[in-house]
Image (tube, rainbow, N blue to C red; front, side):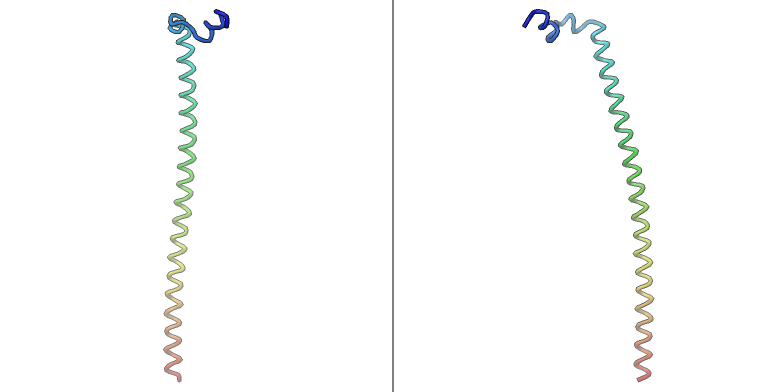
Length: 90
Protein backbone atom coordinates (compact mmCIF):
# COMPACT_ATOMS: atom_id res chain seq x y z
CA UNK A 1 0.00 0.00 0.00
CA UNK A 2 1.38 3.35 -0.98
CA UNK A 3 1.74 6.22 1.43
CA UNK A 4 -1.00 8.13 -0.43
CA UNK A 5 -3.43 5.23 -0.06
CA UNK A 6 -2.61 5.01 3.63
CA UNK A 7 -3.32 8.73 4.07
CA UNK A 8 -6.71 8.32 2.41
CA UNK A 9 -7.67 5.23 4.40
CA UNK A 10 -6.12 6.32 7.68
CA UNK A 11 -5.96 10.11 7.76
CA UNK A 12 -3.64 11.71 10.29
CA UNK A 13 -5.09 13.58 13.24
CA UNK A 14 -4.43 17.03 11.81
CA UNK A 15 -6.39 16.09 8.71
CA UNK A 16 -9.16 14.53 10.76
CA UNK A 17 -9.48 17.70 12.79
CA UNK A 18 -9.50 20.07 9.85
CA UNK A 19 -12.52 22.33 9.68
CA UNK A 20 -13.72 21.13 6.29
CA UNK A 21 -13.48 17.48 7.27
CA UNK A 22 -15.38 18.09 10.51
CA UNK A 23 -17.97 20.15 8.69
CA UNK A 24 -18.57 17.31 6.22
CA UNK A 25 -18.82 14.75 9.02
CA UNK A 26 -21.21 16.91 11.04
CA UNK A 27 -23.34 17.60 7.97
CA UNK A 28 -23.55 13.88 7.21
CA UNK A 29 -24.53 13.10 10.78
CA UNK A 30 -27.14 15.87 10.81
CA UNK A 31 -28.69 14.55 7.60
CA UNK A 32 -28.79 11.02 9.05
CA UNK A 33 -30.44 12.32 12.22
CA UNK A 34 -33.01 14.18 10.12
CA UNK A 35 -33.71 11.01 8.15
CA UNK A 36 -34.22 9.07 11.39
CA UNK A 37 -36.53 11.80 12.72
CA UNK A 38 -38.58 11.70 9.52
CA UNK A 39 -38.77 7.91 9.60
CA UNK A 40 -39.79 7.78 13.27
CA UNK A 41 -42.40 10.47 12.69
CA UNK A 42 -43.87 8.45 9.82
CA UNK A 43 -43.91 5.30 11.94
CA UNK A 44 -45.55 7.17 14.82
CA UNK A 45 -48.26 8.49 12.49
CA UNK A 46 -48.90 5.01 11.10
CA UNK A 47 -49.01 3.53 14.60
CA UNK A 48 -51.53 6.12 15.80
CA UNK A 49 -53.66 5.52 12.72
CA UNK A 50 -53.58 1.77 13.36
CA UNK A 51 -54.49 2.26 17.02
CA UNK A 52 -57.42 4.48 16.05
CA UNK A 53 -58.66 1.89 13.57
CA UNK A 54 -58.28 -0.81 16.22
CA UNK A 55 -60.27 1.25 18.74
CA UNK A 56 -63.08 1.78 16.21
CA UNK A 57 -63.21 -1.95 15.44
CA UNK A 58 -63.11 -2.88 19.13
CA UNK A 59 -65.95 -0.47 19.96
CA UNK A 60 -68.05 -1.83 17.08
CA UNK A 61 -67.37 -5.38 18.29
CA UNK A 62 -68.38 -4.49 21.86
CA UNK A 63 -71.61 -2.87 20.64
CA UNK A 64 -72.39 -5.94 18.51
CA UNK A 65 -71.76 -8.29 21.46
CA UNK A 66 -74.01 -6.18 23.68
CA UNK A 67 -76.74 -6.16 21.00
CA UNK A 68 -76.53 -9.94 20.56
CA UNK A 69 -76.61 -10.42 24.33
CA UNK A 70 -79.78 -8.33 24.58
CA UNK A 71 -81.39 -10.28 21.72
CA UNK A 72 -80.45 -13.54 23.41
CA UNK A 73 -82.03 -12.36 26.67
CA UNK A 74 -85.23 -11.42 24.80
CA UNK A 75 -85.40 -14.83 23.10
CA UNK A 76 -84.81 -16.58 26.42
CA UNK A 77 -87.64 -14.61 28.01
CA UNK A 78 -90.02 -15.31 25.10
CA UNK A 79 -89.06 -18.98 25.13
CA UNK A 80 -89.71 -19.17 28.86
CA UNK A 81 -93.09 -17.46 28.41
CA UNK A 82 -94.07 -19.85 25.60
CA UNK A 83 -93.06 -22.88 27.69
CA UNK A 84 -95.15 -21.61 30.62
CA UNK A 85 -98.09 -21.00 28.28
CA UNK A 86 -97.76 -24.57 26.94
CA UNK A 87 -97.62 -25.98 30.47
CA UNK A 88 -100.79 -24.09 31.39
CA UNK A 89 -102.53 -25.22 28.20
CA UNK A 90 -101.82 -28.88 28.84
